[in-house]
Image (tube, rainbow, N blue to C red; front, side, top):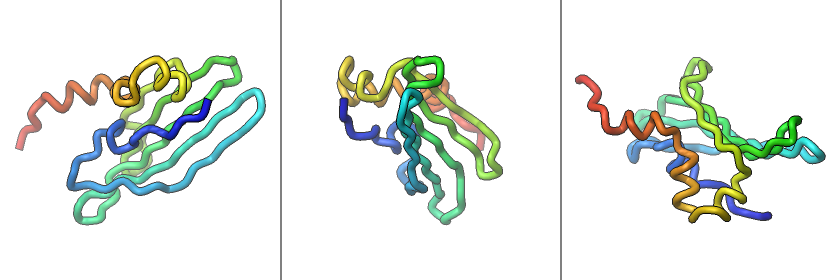
Length: 118
């Protein structure tokens, strides 16, 4: 199955005043197949806010999965989410928009509804 990668800005919920830049991708073939994309998020003052790692793979256990991890500017893992399907299978079973929504972190959706103290 061939399928375009997800809209990373949508999945990571990047604010409109921030920008997301690609920092490359890696792939591996064979029984343990995988593709990994790397991104960096910058605020409007060009400060690094976060780094992201997104993957679409079949693990050593044979299980398909896709997901992502968010690291803060110091490299600490702050958030992540994984779905037990390859990206193309997720898009095939849902619409592309629904697949991107499924790949967003459920807690991040709830956080959008919680006001942040000034």
